[in-house]
Each structure stands twice: as C-alpha cells, then as structure tokens.
Image 1 (spheres, chains in turn purple, yellow):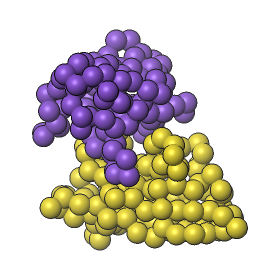
Image 2 (cartoon, one colour):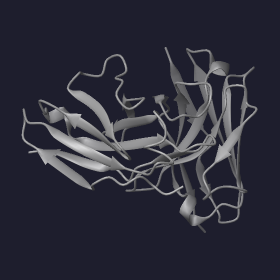
Image 3 (tube, helix red, strand yellow):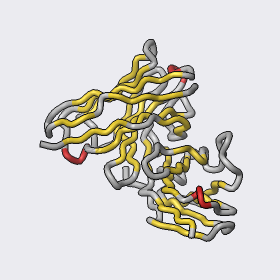
Image 4 (tube, one colour):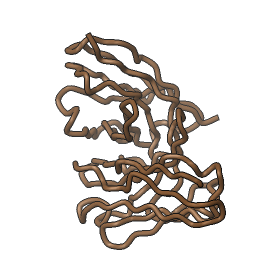
Length: 110
Length: 121
C-alpha cells in the first residue's frame, strides 16, 4: 500500500490552467477506473471533485477535469480562480477493497 | 440533509483504546460502503479502513491492521472504529466518509467534520 506520488506544489495565475499529476502503478491508478480527486481548504473536510477518473459530481464547476495516461492520472484546473487555492489529493482503488491516497499538492493562485 | 457526524475522539495514552462513531443521515446508509480516513497534523490524507454496505467485508491499511476494527450498525445508521493499542503516530483528525458504491472504491462524496484523536502520555 504505497502512497501515490503527487508534486508537493503547483501554481498559476488567475485565468490560467494548471495540471496536477498523480502517479501510481498498474495495481492501482493504471489498473482500475476508480481514481478520485479531492479539494481541501485549510481546516475543512475534503470535497470530491472528480471520480471514476473523469466524472464530475453535481455542483463541481466544469473548470475541473480529470484524465489518465497509463499509471498517471491528472487533474486540470482551467480558468484558475482565487477560490481554487487549496490542497488537492488523488486516490485510487488498489484491489481487494483497499484504497490509497496521494501525498497531496498545494495549489497556489498567484 | 445528507450528513455525517463523528464523535468519540479525545486524548488517550499510548497502548490505550478509543471507539469512534459516525452517525449518518439523509441517505440509505446500508446501500453504501463507508470508510475512515485520517489526517495527521500538517500531513496528507491516509485511508484507514473501509466496510461494504452490508457490513460483510472489511479492509484495513497495513498501518492499523490487527489494532483497529471497523464495523457498522445499519439499524442505527452508524459507523464505528474501535482503535486498540494506540500509538503516537495514530494522532490525527479522523474523518468518516461515504463511498459512492456498495463496496470501498474511493469515490467519497460525503465527509464528516472530523474528530481529533491525540495519543500522548
């Protein structure tokens, strides 16, 4: 159960696009269509932003999109806004009812 | 309103025990898998344990296997986490989270507010 690998930080200016990567293995990210992304503002509970690699829950702006290539999933935030500044975590199903999170990425809006 | 409300956190000595509860409302509790996710101070999220909607299958992170037990009472719409042999490294905010599926798959669409567990002498 090794944690997924995310860059510790990412940044962009308002209106720009930023992509955060999440690298795992063929036993988790690359092996199942159960990759999720969460947004967490300081002191708050996480919020689901993307599930099943590319799907957005109701109420999540379409500025947020998910994708995957091989064992690496990505979250892209387009048209950055100040309120997008937060920590972002990926997670993946890893088989046998086990789950794993990434280490988290702090997104700064410059 | 869909809601999860955790309770039971607090200060405990190393080697001690605590039982966390998570009361669910606003959805058909028995239809969905549930998990506990923790976050140590200043650290990232760590999945701790999950249980299927029916309660017949449980799973644990290696870091808590053999020490923690997850369970649920679908008649009371409540999730539990029995934590034994507590260690300093178990200090964290513990969140309960509702999965989108009947088995643990990680699409946590509802989270509680979290309950703080501190393990210290």
